[in-house]
Length: 267
Image (cartoon, rainbow, N blue to C red; front, side, top):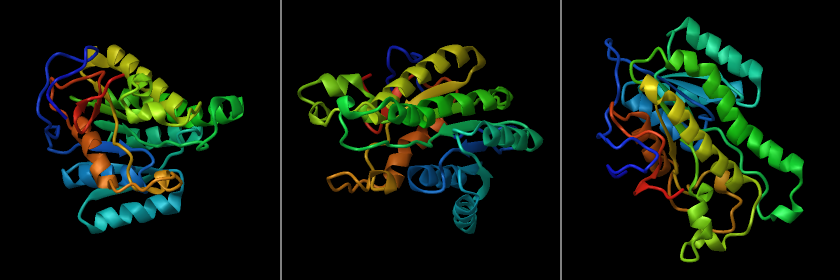
């Protein structure tokens, strides 16, 4: 990521550095982290010395993923969390409240793709609602439930995992390959909405010193992209890098921005 920031972001930028409390330990929660990019984000944050709460809808898969990262030396703990289920969100918040009593980093990674190849004219409202429920409303519910804990951190960070397909500029630029992608009313729409939600949280939380940014990890070779009609060679670890950078910004870093490996992504 470059050091420049978008107009909506703060004008100052700082190199990435893992934020730490007086005891030298921070706690991060990554949703949808039992596999793919979320797993790699959890691994990277743990490697930086954070205690990582590995969120997963499925308890067994979450425990297995956390065990793999603990075997590699990370302080990683599974936590059951379905971002569409208020009960599991409340339970996760209560568990963090009990110990450690605050949250320093929230990575809203969980997401669904929805159907591939259906144009807007062939997409029913129930399908759109299902995708928005996870990719936008789920982010809202998780973030709001955890905000009291994030506000206890001296330097909290929120990263919403978006996508380049959420960029209106990409889709409307004849020179950009995304302008030639099939039209869709689901995943791209949800990521555009998530970007706006990111900006609004950044506006609200700037006064609290909480940096909120959206990350575009790029198309990576994961289960999420296995049904696409072309081959992807970018790894999940490659995609995780920008998310980790935004999750570990030093004070004075950008907020309200949309970034990928190259820097600012056009809205």
